[in-house]
Image (cartoon, rainbow, N blue to C red; front, side):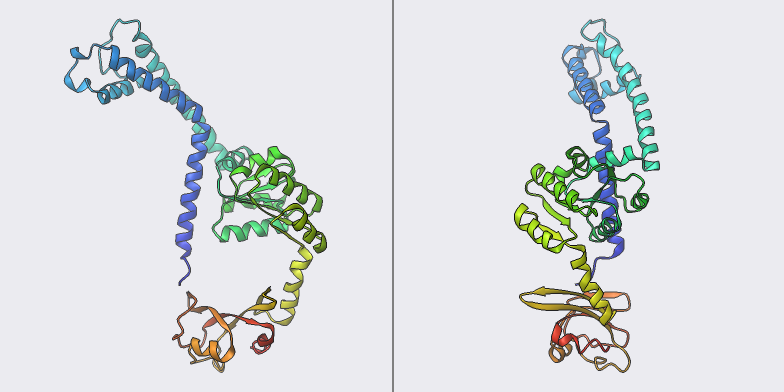
Length: 351
């Protein structure tokens, strides 16, 4: 199974971004569109039922033909003669005025929106955030929040951020990721609503204030009971209690999470991650096949059998295989991602 090309991921992200822009336009113009649609339908019905159609050519007699005449009347055309009927006077005089308003208002509103988009202003970001759905809300744009957002974008997720400090240096970098930021207190329900929390699938509170993270999580739990909630808590004991007591999906201690990273870095730069599963510590290790490596010219199936490892990925040049076929013969320069336990990992730390 090969990884999805970056160009395809970029295309899908661009499509999603275009759809959000379209939703912004529909939201901002919704009142104007509804009023114009009502006026158009009303005028079409009045012309179809009251205008003496028998005096016109046959192609004007159908409802579709009358609808086309209505469009032309709206934009200062005269497809049908004027009839001195008080019931139709609003159509003949009102539609051109409506058309003028449509053009004028549309140009002004669209120009305003384009200006807001170009400057990526706060107003534009709020409008963009209101158009999101099935997204993840990240509260707190510090170091942890920004890195979390970056990882979520790599996974192809849509993200809306909340940050209390409008001067945060990370806010300036969000435009590159097409991520809107709502400025305000993460505990404030109104601010959460601005981030479309009711349409979100997950909420992450990762500020450096434990109490704020917990309070925000409880507020979100009240607003959206079924949403997935993850919070950052400095004290790992408090994190465990918060999960159990408040029904939070996950509460992580930054110090507890960083400890394995420091330990892994001390052992080898190729030791990528360690985690516990079923009482066993599992390690993710990457290695490159060198000229004198015992793995050179060995089939992947033989590597699995001889070293008691699981080969998750194989890379040759720019081609990456997930769960590679067992018959692949390893060459110099090939890279492997393997999973193994603590006892077996010692064999690879010398590579």
